[in-house]
Image (cartoon, rainbow, N blue to C red):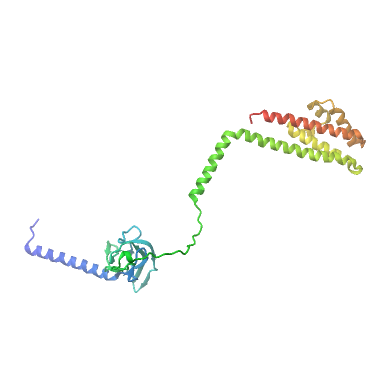
Amino acid sequence: MKPLSLQNIYCWKRGLSLVWIVLLTSTLVLGQQVKGRFMEDSIGIGIPVKYVLSCKHPEKYDVFFPDSTYNFAPFELVKREYTTTSTQNGISSDSVIYTLISFEVNPIQKLQLPVYIRSEQDCTKVMPYEDSINFHSMIPSNASLDTLQLKTDTLPIHLSQQANFPLVLLVFLGVGAFSMLIFWLFGKPIKRQIKLFQFRRRFDEFQRVFQRLSKDTNETNRRLENVEKALVLWKKYIERLEEKPFTTFTTKEILDNIKDARLPEALREIDATIYGGNFSIKTVSSLAILQELAEGLYREHRQDLVDSPV
């Protein structure tokens, strides 16, 4: 390798200087295309103020503005609004309006936000000229604290009602946990009482309809029909109690499953009434026997339900 001559070193330094000049000129040109300014002249504590950051750049370049993760000190970001990109003659214009607040009391507060312009080769950070805004104090600088009076504001502010979802969730979880605890401790007695209630309701409904049909046997034109309906109703109720198909059983099969000395005579009397049309005072007595048998079976099964562990 040949050593560099003084002439080569001079040429190398001159070329490097030209590169820096080109880069600096390019940065200055881009800097002139980026502008940032406040839209108000003064600011108060906690009062929102708008800051506009705009940039003009070649259409082929991408532009990035500071987002909510950027440090806007001495200001705090409230929101930002983007404008629609407009392009004319290959030059695009983008801008963002930042709404800021400040709780500092410095007489002059300054802000300078960068814009990042990305080309095909690299990404350049461009800073606009720094802009400032005056702080407007509500207390005059030459005022004495002893002479100041507090401002009062007694006008009510209407607040819209909002659901406290965490509290609602806790209430639901608490009710659910309490219900599970109650069911775990008293689940079986509760289930037993529910079954007893349903059991009693079905018996009361059977008695109500059966008694109505039994009383309607005094009407000659509907006498036989009501006796038959009462017998079918009795069979259906017994079938549900005994869990056997009594509605399809013959008289002999019913007698084989229900042991009662009064039942054979009662069923024969009812069959004679239905199929032979021989209605008598014994028919009413036979229906009463069927009702008594149903009530006796109800009491037996109810006691079984009470004694069962559920």
